[in-house]
Length: 507
Image (cartoon, rainbow, N blue to C red; front, top):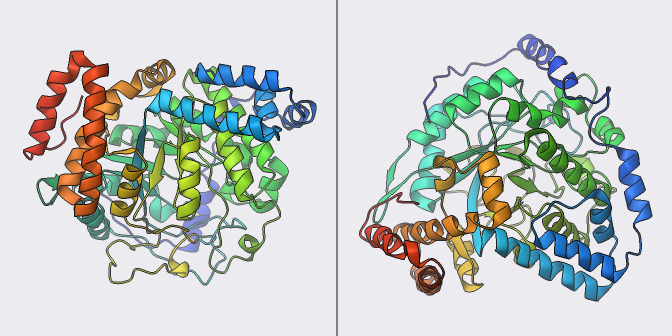
């Protein structure tokens, strides 16, 4: 990851208007349209949902078998699963979702932290605490020294290796700022109990960009590029995102991942914000998005997220949304997404409370965050453990520490993986798609999960977490010995070197 320089300066209203005016490049949308139409077909989605009600048990079980083969489901097949009501069939769906996750990703859970670097925004989304009309929000963009301080806490005190770095849509946090801050994050290296802490992978959640800017990010070096469509239902989208704003252009956002792929970024993350429209439509549209990316580029989404709308400071829309998703519906949509797009990583975040996260992890989730603070500058401000609504986009449901979450995962039989090796070894894009569909990626990741878990326990784990973690490691080592004898000797050399204080060893 190279370091760029950026001189942060205040922007006037006229500067912002000029920046907004030139952001959208129509030619970078039109080239991907099919006779002027986009790949989201609302009539086809509604037709699939209305013609696949009351599915026969045999039909459902045939669909589950297909999912177990790690094949992307069709819209009709996905609609069938959405309509399942029979408790026995629902239980089979949940069981199959868990089997698919284990087949593709083993028993690993990847952890990360969100890092918000600014809350200036030119958009005015009805549900967002960062919308520019929210005068109750404390506005701030972190300078590079402040970014380094945040990273020192995350990498040196908490022990994270992977971040999702979040940027608002504003000229003060443009592509040059993103490049500069990613370099600052990557440069931080902190002494720990036995070794050293450093962020090894920065995923980026940012606004849609033109291809030329995405090429710059690809050159700088990023992990997954994440853009949420918010809602795929176009009338709802246009109602919630005012015309005349950048985000008001539905198609510019919808084709953000096409431009990322064109720019060479082959790991992308998608998802809606559940609660803006009917969750059934959104699940179907996510499937359409995955199918489109697979057909166009041969690479589906690296991750799918499924955040639900949460309360936000001085944002009335979030208090009682018309399409609020109940907990039982949330569990079902996670199950259906895992079955419909079986190869993808699935992220459940600290928006949800601790108990619900425990309940949905077995349904196919692969990633979760911990020790999360989303107020601007919140990690370095350790004296204040409370959430501050006027500094963050929404309120979190689970603010437990990483150590607590890791301990709980180990008690449940999961191994927490801090591995970032695949991305540095070129196991991305089409290559990783093949490995995921064949189940081979889990073999690499099991080896690296154990090594990085050992590293984290020695550097950051509490006594209780170390004790529980040791049991998980012993079980994992035995599985490697019996299932992968051809690499066991080399694995144990790496493992013993890690115990001795070596860091960042991987296969």
